[in-house]
Amino acid sequence: MITKNGQELIEKSLTSVIGLVDEIVIVDNYSSDRTVTIAKKFGAKIYFYKEEDLGKQRRFGLGKVSNDWVLVLDADEIVSKELKKEIKKVMSYELGVRREKIDGYYIPFQNHFLGRRLRYGGEDYKMLRLFKKDRAKIHPSTVHEKFELKQGRAGYLKKKIYHYSYRSLWQMFRKFSDYAIREAKQKSKNGEKSSFKKIFLYPPHLFWARFIKDKGYKDGLFRIPLDLGFAYMEFLTYSTLRVYEAKFI
Image 1 (spheres, helix red, strand yellow):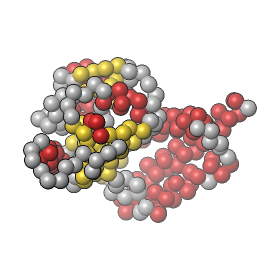
Image 2 (tube, helix red, strand yellow):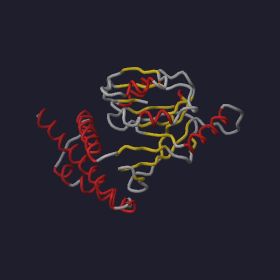
Image 3 (cartoon, rainbow, N blue to C red):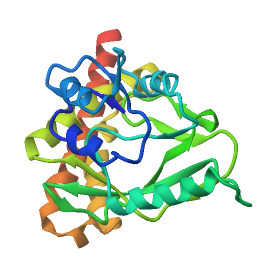
Image 4 (tube, one colour):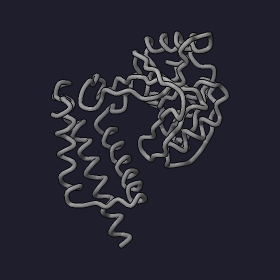
């Protein structure tokens, strides 16, 4: 787990893996709240590492893990009781004799907005989060780092990780603002350019894609602020990128 000011949910997150994991490794980006204090109650091994690239933070943490198998969580993610049982079952197979060897498992996510479940509009997905330490590759990213198997075979679990990424409107827009600035910096480093189209047409298209095309409306009208938030993040990303361009011209 990598953390920065995650005191709101980290206790529930770590509680959800009690009896499932042998060690807890946390890479903290110098939190100013009670994140570290709470983590210490669980006997976590805590390492402080200041870095904007989340992928680099994950790789640093992976190097501190002593076990062969790794479960990756964020501080706002909770392992469901059903998933906990499922992981125990597949691990008992993996550590024993089995015909079909699996090197990593994709886990489905159940996202929430203001405490309510989301099922549509890009919020239904699986990610590689349980894998053999020496078989995983972590792509660098300042926003959403990606895990993939560099070798071996992947399996798919059925039970879910509960993700509480959008807990209030203020917290959501603060997160999206941070993501947008990070993404703009990354795009600038990669040489991408902003444009009128990207600033003013991409945001409404993203709202349409999430709420209409991907049937976000089936979750209910309550999720409109969320999809507007994604549009806002898109607008802020390319507006900030344009500022970076003007600065360096």
